[in-house]
Length: 580
Ligand code: PEP
Ligand code: MG
Image 1 (cartoon, protein in one colour):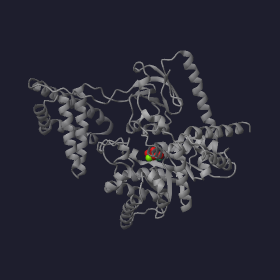
Image 2 (cartoon, protein in one colour; image 1 turned 180 degrees about the vertical axis):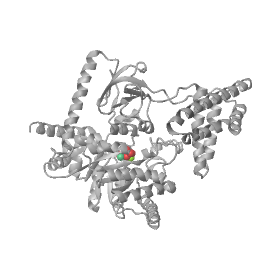
Image 3 (cartoon, rainbow, N blue to C red; image 1 turned 90 degrees about the vertical axis):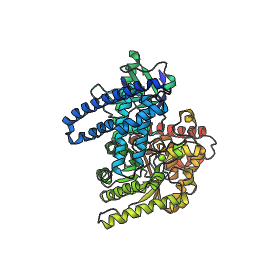
């Protein structure tokens, strides 16, 4: 048995499929003048192979989507035929004595940057074409295999070095029983998505593997405790098969409370909403009895594509979600890229500290064109449901005001065009930066609601990168500093008379429930898969007892003490419930 870190609960049993490594290693060695001709020929050969591969894709696609859609590939062939492209590559080989693959990579980067800088949508799309076709050429030069997931085989357990959120967005849960990544952390966005999709995930097994996993091996993973079995004996397979069916049965039973009101025995109502990142996840949320959506992570709409989504495309999605919710609230968070969330077509700067860098609301306020497009789409959708708008990563009053100024421009434009929107749409912010906690009283005067983003708040408060495995033991959501931060935020909201919710991963942690009940928060928004468990706990946890426990937390000096207290409280509640 190999001990990884459980990042998305559940058991999966099946055959492995190992995703080839997509990180290309380029040769560092310089070449000699005598090698020039050979390197030129390698580039020509790579171009010939790429062209015939593109022709083949075109033929296959033509039958499926019609010839209109295959024109993009003509553009790719035209780039490969373009003498300017070839001249650039040859120039790098000759002037800098670099190998063919390095020259190709540098030529791609050069043209992509050049086109990307132009303030012209068409040219920006050309940059994407160059990148796409350039990568194909590079793949042939390096002899790297095509990276695709099989869809015609039995469902499998995916093994990968790591998975980006956009790769995960691609995954069909019907084909992927579970995932093991060599690297990764439980609070990455990939892990959050795996939980949302209900796909068991174990991360961080790299140092534990004596030899690499091969495609076709029998694998069992337990996403709760992080165990991974490779080609286990029959006895283990039987044990886990039983456990798997037990879990499925328990899940079915839990669904019995989906329609119950989320109220404690002493009458405190706590709304339980869902975090989603796509329309696809909405059905799971609704079947779990979610009270609307407390966090729609819109950045996933921007991923897995080759350009920014247009206003109309965004509007369609927001409107569909709002309508499907039938009057239940939908909190749409504006674009939160940067950190571990990247867009292939939007080159973010190389940064030493991307989580502290150019991301989220900072990008929106810098790129008002993109921001306004999104705001217009959200405003338009507000006409079709109970939409609320939320800004991420707010750290000052100025940012809220600047964002609202763009929002007002968008509103004016819609009014002038006679396009309807909800004039009473509520505006809120994420509280996920310590500065926002410290000025929560000032921020509360500017907005209608707060939503506490504990994932980022923990990393910024404790100065512990949520993606860094080396220090994952220091990522302590139950640190006394956090408890104080939560208290300050909720109290500031209450004093100002605005509503306050929690949408970080802590919202779905049963041990945190007494904290929320004692502080009297209004809403918890979480991965759909946690909703029923939290509701079951809520139905038997009184607010009064929660307040008593919370009082005791103040005398705790360490995370361990706090966790012990909360865990024993949860166990007491469970025991009482079991005894009827
Ligand atoms: C958070 O930071 O807690 C949060 C909900 O936002 P995200 O996980 O998308 O950064
Ligand atoms: Mg966040």
